[in-house]
Length: 323
Ligand SMILES: NC(=O)c1ccc[n+]([C@@H]2O[C@H](COP(=O)([O-])OP(=O)(O)OC[C@H]3O[C@@H](n4cnc5c(N)ncnc54)[C@H](OP(=O)(O)O)[C@@H]3O)[C@@H](O)[C@H]2O)c1
Image (cartoon, rainbow, N blue to C red):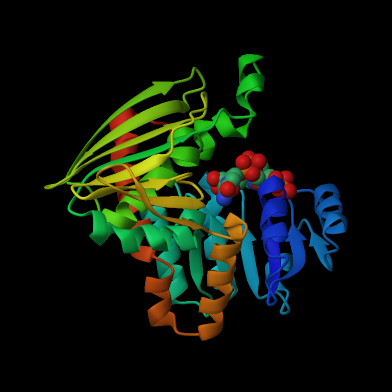
């Protein structure tokens, strides 16, 4: 499948590297806002076509699928354009900045020959499947602790007075959108939308949230989601049931997961063998090849994306975030 890339930062390099062992993945073209960047990126990855003209990029009949890795605020505009050109779209997380924009994407997908997937890589890891499988063993589940703290490489610059995209709320960025979504999405995928939520956060002077904690109430369980762009943490994530505990090393990219009994003894360990982004890519390609539009909605977890964006709408209002 011939892929074109929108967005030329390191995450696109990583996706291309992750696809190295996937037979049907063919890096093919790139669109950048500037020709210099398009050429530099194209040379680095030996791409056949480089352009700074989005219309020309999408009009290319050879192009089959588009990977979007641009700031969150512009995902929906680019995704809809690509779907209108009947391209398949793999779009970085979070899929959009609000549920209304996501609805517009899914409507465009209905009218297109293309399929759409939010690249929420943690949901497609085999280790995450294993976690799902173990839930019954530890149940009933009473508590979920999902953590993702990552001191941003752009925070040092922020402290020097240089505000990079990562801390610009007008681009749909900030801790909840960049980091927190990795805790919200698996919670919803596993347990659905909470009945009620509370949120606490720290905001920077740029208006971006930098650190946060969401307390989620379900009828029979409680979840605590913690995320940050200004501190690191060594804590793993865990799902706690009456009969055992599941430990997840990294909720943004589950790799090593463990099943523990109530005595805290390890009963089983599972490890995903391949690079984290390779699973979403493989899943995307195989689902597109299966050519079943009805089944693809389920396979691509559209319902999880919708519920996540609806929860983000609420959290945005609660925190008076500016995007
Ligand atoms: N899956 C993961 O592990 C992972 C990791 C990091 C980020 N992400 C996601 O990937 C996406 C990109 O994140 P990032 O940190 O790479 O973003 P970024 O550096 O701010 O922008 C990515 C690319 O988008 C283009 N761009 C920059 N500013 C833009 C603007 N104002 N309007 C339109 N295009 C712009 C640039 O490409 P050109 O200059 O070539 O046009 C840039 O290389 C986000 O959705 C983020 O959440 C995912």
